[in-house]
Amino acid sequence: MKDKLFAWIDNAQSLAVELETELTKRPAVSPESGGEGELDKCLFLESWLKTHGITNLERYDAPDSTAKGGIRPNLIATIPGSGDGRLWIMSHMDVVPPGEEKLWDNDPWTVMRKDDPPGARLIGRGVEDNQQGLVASVLAVLSFTKQGLKPNLTIKLLFAADEEVGSAYGIEWLVNNHGALFKKDDMVLVPDGGDIKGEFIEISEKNILWMRFATRGRQAHGSRPDLGENAFIAGSDLAVRLHHELSAKFGDHDPLFDPDYSTFQPTKKEANVPNINTIPGEDVFYMDMRVLPRHSTELLLAEIDRIKAEVEAKYRVTVTCSQIQLMQSTPTAADAPIVKKLSTAIPEVYHVTPRPVGIGGGTVAAYLRNIGIDCAVWTKTQETLHQPNEYALLDNILGDAKVMALLAVN
Ligand SMILES: [Zn+2]
Image (cartoon, rainbow, N blue to C red; front, side):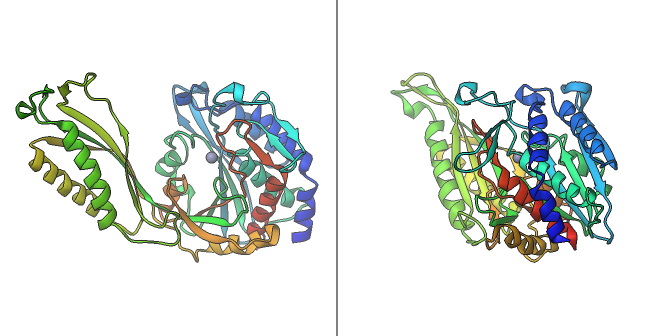
């Protein structure tokens, strides 16, 4: 069956170009980024799939009054298999805005084909992120159905809304409102992340904690520090202590990740006083913390509290900490069925040795992993996502489709 599937996919180049071109014409930019949402793109995809014989389609529309039609559509196509297992392939329909249009060689919403190095490719906003995965998943399914073949696994293609600015109307909404869609033994592939060779199978993410630290002291004239409490000095000491002490306390290494340790970085700094001769009474900075999943977030928060209390006592200031984002993710096991299947299928197509990796976070896989469903993030990517002149190699679209088809064969 493999040869038949691969031969069909090799001949599907024009279908890939057609689908990429039509999808790109319908800019599914989220309302938060100044767009209309995914409705036009979703309606087109639905009718295109029907035309090609994929008729088992369901829509799950998240209400969003700021989007066209008042909804953010999530579309599911089901292709029944002969066995009991189920394979989800989850891509997303939304795209990021083009950015500075003058950096593009062509209109970002009109797909251009080029055949010079690094290879035959399609250029346009969204062609790689995430239409490479989306189109590949469609071709994988059609390689069965168009030839009257049945996969062993039931294939569920999920075309989700709202990946780029959170997932409140996409997978997070689906998990919270239609969680029964997903079953314990389902396998999930998210073709939306990877590396240039197709070797990385992402199975784990660092926990992400973003925090804001607001230090309040007492403002005074620059010549009279004795009458004030310099919030900037206290805040600076706090930032340095958090960086060093947390790095030491949560200092484990895990070779799955790159870098292989937790990171605690002071990042954004808000302006304090506008003039040089005032001692600032307030100071605000932020930390971006990426923590190996083995470390408990409760312990981390307790340690932050301890350091904060020390700084408050030393400088006679008060510090208010607030969480901006906390994303915790349960890892998928390195020997989970989806990881094993990928590890077998990828070498058959790309002749590389895949290996499981962890990343700094965060992907939509976390929403599924957190409800106990194995989820691997994989694709062979040129990593041009979000850039001007974003492109997808045709070889990658077709190659990814072959890997996906192999996953469902047995
Ligand atoms: Zn993406």
